[in-house]
Image (tube, rainbow, N blue to C red; front, side, top):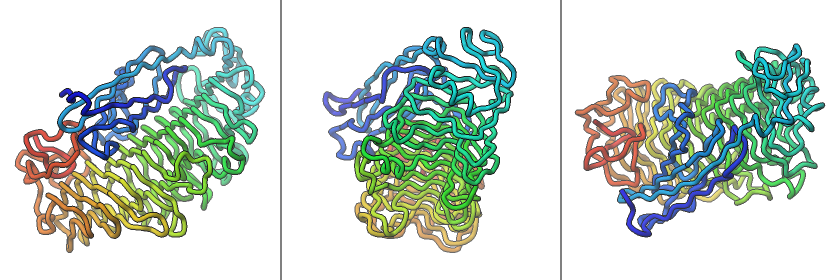
Length: 570
C-alpha cells in the first residue's frame, strides 16, 4: 500500500545518528500525522525495521511471539546496535487505507578503534595485552579491587575490561563523573566477572552534584552481587548523566538494582535536567531486599527504554519496576514478576513537583510484548497514575499492546488505570487461580484529572477458575470505549464483560462468557494456545477499529472483517 499524497506525513527523529558500539538509539515518530485521524499516537501503526538482521532474537520471554530484535512497532521505539557498521533504519506508518515510509542512517564505530589508546584490562592475575581477549595495545592491571581499579584509572582509561571468570570486591562506589564515550565491561570467555559488594555500598555511583552534563557510557557483561546488603545499589545515579546503556548486566540481592530518583536532580537545581537516553537491555535484575523503599528498578528519564530484561522478586522490598517520571519511553520484551504483598509489578506515576520535567505529565510511553506475573496477595499487577489519592500526578498518551498478563494467585487487578488517553489492545489476560478475576479497572484515584479516552480494543480475557469474572470496569471517566474484546470463563459463578459507561461494540456478551470461543488450547496457558481455531465464533465478528495487526504481529484483518479478541483465526 502507498498512501495518497499528503495522507500520512511521517516524522522520524533518532536520538543520535552516530556513536561507538554498543550504541543505543531512541526513535521518535510521535510527530507523525495523518488525515484519517486526530489521534495519530494511538490510531496509526508504526512498524520499524532497524536494518540489523544479525541482532537475533529476544530470549527473556521464551513463551512469547514477536522475538526479533530487528523489528518493532509503536510511535516510539529503541534499538541497541552492537556491531560496527552503517545501518538503514526504516519506518512504515499505516492508517488502514495506505502506508508511508521514511528512513535514516545510523553510523556505529568500532570500540577497538575508538578506545585503542585508552583501554585497561583488569584480572586477578596479570592479563596479557593481545591475548585471552584483552585487546592488543591495552594497559593491564592485576587486582581484585573493583572500585579501586575503576576510581584510580578511569580518568585515563575510558574502556575498562574485567576478566571473565574472575571475582572482584567492591567496598566503595566506583564513581563515574566525567564525559565519555566510555565503557566498563568484560574480556575473555566464560562466566561474567563477579563484583561482590563487601559493605553497604553501591557498586557504581554515576555523576555528582557538580557534573550535571556528562554523558555517553556503557556498562555491560558484569555480575553485581549485593550480598543481601540492606543499603546497597547496583547503580546509584546521583546527578545528571545522559546516554547510559546497561547491557547484559546481572544485578541481584540489592536494596536497589538501579536508583534514579528525580529528588536528587531537584536537590541539585536546574542544571541537572531529566536523564536522557537511558537503556536497560538484556539484563537480569532481581531480589530487591531491605524492606520499604527498595525496588528492582527505580527508573526515570526521557527517551529511555527497558527491553529484553528479566526483572523479578521485590518480595522483601516494594515494587518491581517503579517509574516516578517518564517522558517518551519504551518497555518491551521484559519478563517482570513477584512484587511485595499489595505492591505492583509496574508502578508508573508522574513527579508533578519536578521542575526539570519536560511536561507535567508522564506521557508518550509504550508497553509491548511483556510478560507480567503478579506475586504476593492483593497485588494490582500494572498501575498507571498517582502514587495515592493526595498527589496530582498525571499520566497520559500510553499504549499497552501484545502483553501477556500471566496467571498468578497474588493477582487482584491486572491493569489499574488512573490516566488519560490510553489504548489497551491485543493483550492476553489469564486470571486462572488468581485472587481476583479483574482485568482492567479505570477510575479516578484522588485529585488528579478525571480519566478520559481509555480505549480497550481486541483483548482476550480468560479464566478456568470459579468466582466473579469482570474483564473491563469503567468506574469513572469520559470518552471510554470497549470494542472487540473476547471473554471466556466456563467455571465463573458470575460475570460482567463490561461494567460502566462506555461506547461498547462487538464484545463477548455476558451469557457467551460461558461458551468456548474455540481456542487452539482446550484450557489455554501459553500465548500460542489462545490463537483462534478455524471454527471459532470470534472469526469475522468484530467491529471496525484502528487496530491493524494482532497479538502475533500479523496483519488485521486476515479476511474481510476483523476478528474478536487478541488473535485472528486462520
